[in-house]
Length: 373
Image 1 (cartoon, rainbow, N blue to C red):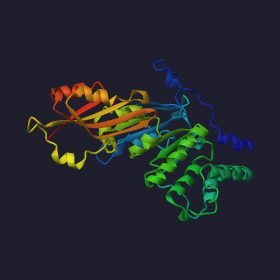
Image 2 (image 1 turned 45 degrees about the horizontal axis):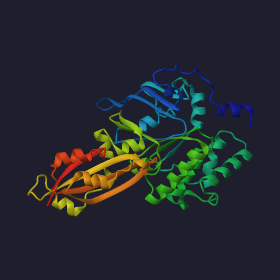
Image 3 (image 1 turned 30 degrees about the vertical axis):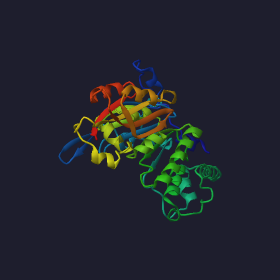
Image 4 (image 1 turned 180 degrees about the horizontal axis):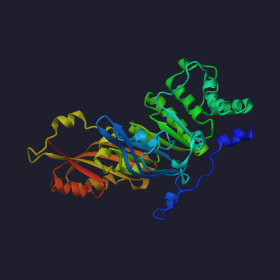
């Protein structure tokens, strides 16, 4: 590789941003947003897509961004590679303010930040090999190095036997694997995923998530993804942030946000992951007790480590009376148990509110759904 090409592939060392002593871990963040804002000029006046975003993404983590349509997810992720220019605030990568970069530095930066999209963005007239090789040719990388790199990447994404195929001959999952390989040609430190699995069926989605997690572990990439699929966040992300009207309304470890969401937006987004009430129960459920024999229906949600799972025998004994388990399920995220129990309690000496409080000794959230006879 010539010296000129080598210089183009390297990010020059600009002046580092001033550190803060408020949160020492922020100074170790791979990507950091400080007071970030983005305003667009709409037909009826300015539109604030992002407002006061303060956020740190750590090196090597898989970080999810969720929110309703128009919440600002795409605007936020695209400020990382300056496809979107912030209206205010700063974006730091390794403590370097990328807002100070000139065009040459931006080119070098973008070669160190890979990006994959929902619709793959492959060139239909080029083979798998040629699609992956193209960014290297544009960068002026010598042929022997290009061939070695493309061969390694196709093996990494499991497409070594498809190098002569054209996009029309590939499945959706295979097309996305080509997109991932192409995004990795310059050995990026950060991979941005913009609805990367939204066009895929559930089985293919799981295979792509498995590949992304393998890449994250093997290459140490920081992965930042946006999606409307909450199951994707649950299955792959370490931490998640929830946006609403361009502002952060909640953030934290995935197990914590999913297990005990605090904001109404978070609860709405995560509702599809909750178990629906059985149809037979929905038909019988009443808001008020219709007779002294009516049973109270409780929904309990709990989170904790594997060793903190609730003692159901002790719970049932504490509630008194006849306790029936109507529905239940437990899943584990990041080593933490996230569970839900649906119980009916009859012939107890405790009223509904007392039952709710008693059950709260075992669960983070307890809700009285109503009564059944």
